[in-house]
Length: 111
Image (cartoon, rainbow, N blue to C red; front, side, top):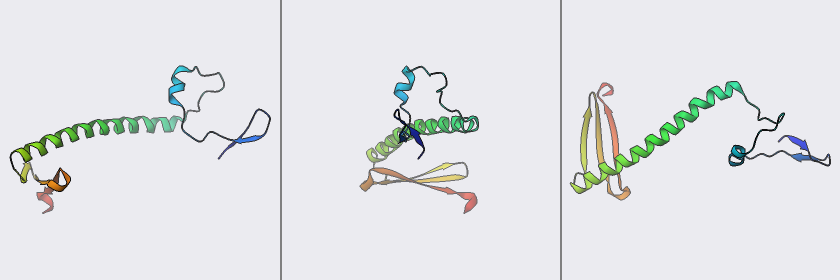
């Protein structure tokens, strides 16, 4: 942990938690006290953050669709179903104890 000096010259521990982002939006940056910017890391972080949020949004949609499939299979008393998508087969099975649909993928090329 890096050390800095307090007002009276004694060493003190640096703030180790993340930045206070809420306060940062309202505060102006003080000249000479700008946050350090690592250009190489900024190039890597931007696509990472974008992909992360895309995945989170896709997961919300997956959860909604999963609930629809589970509900339909339950309502129509379908405990098992095989779906073919080109060379790939998917076996869907309702797992009653977990309230979910289990999906197994079978690729014909690997069989």
